[in-house]
Image (cartoon, rainbow, N blue to C red):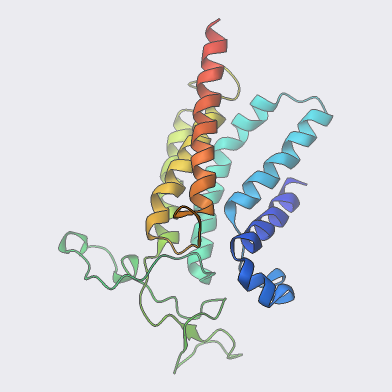
Length: 229
């Protein structure tokens, strides 16, 4: 139930974020291989879980804490899939030379053109490895591979949450920390990530991540205060 709700939410939020593309080709956008927004999946999946635990009288805080580390790990692993498929979750063009102190890293970690991307963005490749000749497009200019950065941050934050999993006695505090980490990670990457601005120079993800940070902080300190009373 949660997985299905999350998938539907991810698709809906992506269409809202890219409304003009949806209007121009609604059927194609709905059934495309890409076009999933993480926050849409998180919000709708969470609502489904809340409805489930309320129905069966399960303690929400305990379930939320149990899900905190797996959610962060799933986010990191999911971003690896985004990078490998080239589903459009990449950054702004990066034409700068790679700094010398990053010479130990492969060039694609600094700028990548996403050959054979699933959304067929960019220019058609002269030599294509796809036997069907469908996914034969590559970006004209390299972009920041933000999905790689997010995968790395997701795995690091998963490790931190996992180590802290027994540090809080009050159910829900660990999940509050997860919300803060998730919001900080996404807000920090948005400056080099390709996304449409929606309001006062902010993207949908920046607004949602800010709300998650505030919600997580509020939840964490509210539970901490109540547990000490």
